[in-house]
Length: 151
Image (cartoon, rainbow, N blue to C red):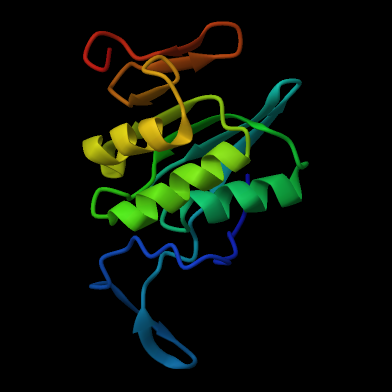
């Protein structure tokens, strides 16, 4: 479990509507308690995110710093990219490619178009970059099984 994820890059993916009371006053709630699960495998790290409010790249960089600097075997979860600009999606895809990302499952708040753009820009295939659907799975030996909806 990552614990709190530092916001190194300006991956803004919260609506800005939520507020929180802090000693400094009322601030935008950027979900500072966001955490992710990192599984260290022989083939690289598997990063599982809930809603990715910390940003998918911030999350991966924190995982690599905390666990080990390894390729990303899979990144799975929601990444709050459904409203991201083309520039942001291109940057995200470039970083994923730099990390050696082999599999990407973008669920719920990632957005359909965001997944397809990341697939194209990161050089992933239809088999290795899919929209996460209910029942979709990832296994170390077989990779992604997106079920019928996401094929």
